[in-house]
Image (cartoon, rainbow, N blue to C red; front, top):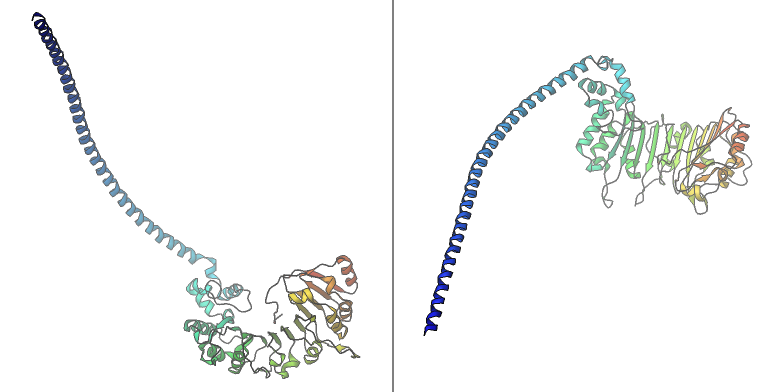
Length: 460
């Protein structure tokens, strides 16, 4: 019994000790929590004060920025006003400089001559607002008046006829152009691309441009027409043409045309003729004009060239340019009769140009040409030219320099003669060949003329 009482007493003392310790620890914990809460409250209060302060500062900054933006806008408006004033002043400066510019005081006649030098180098001027003469009309009122009063600026034009599809504005522009030329002779290029239905009969007179050109046909001095044979027939029959230079380029067609009759041409003026295309037969030109034609150019693929007949039919020829093609195993040339006993003499021919297509330069032989030269006597010949037109093959002079060339030039009575090879490889002995020909009063040259598609010039 005493043992149990003692044990209970000890247990009670231990519990009192634990309770005492737990109370102290609780006080410590509570003190710690109170301290942490006080620190948190301080931090929260500080954050709230900082947010209020920063908000007020941000509002002040926004206020300042708004004021600065307003000032910037005001400055920009003031700058814009000043820039506008600057442009106005610069405009007045340019106007006043123009008023004292020496060009302004040039006589009208001098400006007209300057304007003529501004024209493109093209034989037929293509109307374009970025080139003379249309460009000259956009500079100032005086220049426009002078340009429109200078007929020479408007005496050449390249036009395209699309038939009934030709725009009225285009026709009106051409009408004003031709009217500005007044009574000047006209150099006109007409290209008709045939954009109509082949299955229907086409009446070319439905084109306003066609009728316009026909109304000015009496002033045509130089005419280039590229179209089908039927269009060319109608075009030439629709006007009173008295051209001096004519280039006819017949486009191939998918149907047969009556190409046996000559064109309707005035016979008093024509001297320069160029025919291009297989269907561009010599019979297109009235035979009554043959004796007066001095310049003839032929570019007719698929048609044999009869040098003898050409020289006999055109006794007044001064210049003959012929493009040769290769067909089968030889050049498309009619060989002279083997039993010919005398030379064909042409008294007036001064320039003979032989132009070789790419096939002719690559596969052709000079043998047939050599026989032609052996049959000719050209006492007035001063220039013989060979020109290779194909860029894919470079012919050599040695292959196209027969002895008959020397004989043909040696028979000329001209004191100064020239033998020219363009787009050919130089001979192996260039110096020796040049010296040999120089002894015969022949200037021998080999150069590179390029491979332009329009190698003919009927005015040269």
